[in-house]
Image (cartoon, rainbow, N blue to C red; front, side):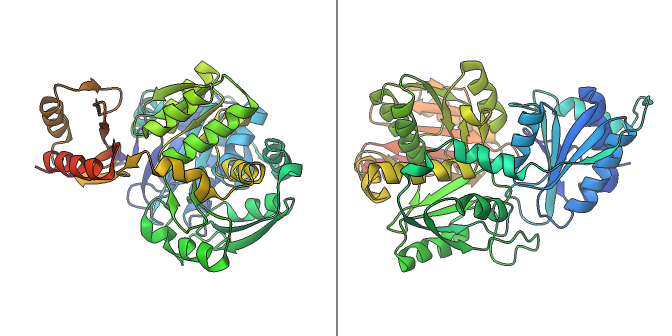
Length: 446
């Protein structure tokens, strides 16, 4: 059986259905997961993708044939899946391709929360087992057990804020026909907010727009709607609900590092002196605001497997990534879309301020390029060229290359899945940011 080895990614398994990933491969993935983890019970869920039911059934069959009981949690968001794994103390598999286009599917795999299988921790062993397709004979056949924890999840996320502190707010939410709509409506029914929903029904056909709100075309309608409705804030979620994005009251998209700075500063008021983790791409605003609030900022490489591990090792309070992943110690060190949305509502209520007012001091001081992708034939060669060109700067190779000067800095890192280099750059004036951005891009694309 021919299997495309490129489906085994840095953080998960992912490919186009049915050419790269089909039921036979899903069956092998189930068996391999049970073997690798010596699992007796495994949580199993899926998102709304059209290939999800058949891939989930095949993976379940593989797990049970290898002797593991399957706890079927059905169609869920990723933070619901993490909640199930954490509260049951069990490994898990979720059939999802996150924000990828609808032709894709895959598996996110939990070893034991908050530790996931990743490229340097389990996925390469999975790859070997799946490619070989030979598994030890089990001593029993597992069984399927249906599990429902919706009410417990709602109570957990609501326990992370003071609901009584919320003031009436008008919120426009776009879940893009992904997985967040149903659970978000259930949670928000308990809040004093006016919820204006867009595309809340999970639909694997994706009839309205794509699943990645980082792409401007996927959030343009939400931005218009926030202004038209005179809303306090707009929220967007990616397909499987582990990423969260904010539109302010002006209808402007809020960068993930600015949201990390604001939420980190706010959470430190409740828990002074704690550690907060951010990724190598982030604005200076994050470390500056956390230090000013008495916290300890710690930089980590990009990727949820690395961030969760570092959070657990450091017992960090909170972590944020530029790409909209936000992680919380009180939510099992996991990332969630719903939890940061609740914290933003509480922050706006307690501050009694518009989000645009909270952002203005950041916008006047920190000038960021946002992430700019370039397709390149030789990523390693381009990174070497950058290292040589900026040899007089402070440099770090934690994740790609980070180059730091007193008044500007940048990170360039290769994509884990495509022949791309990703640039994030910041300077202390807009003119300097634009000049340096163009200068670095010329080297990347040269």
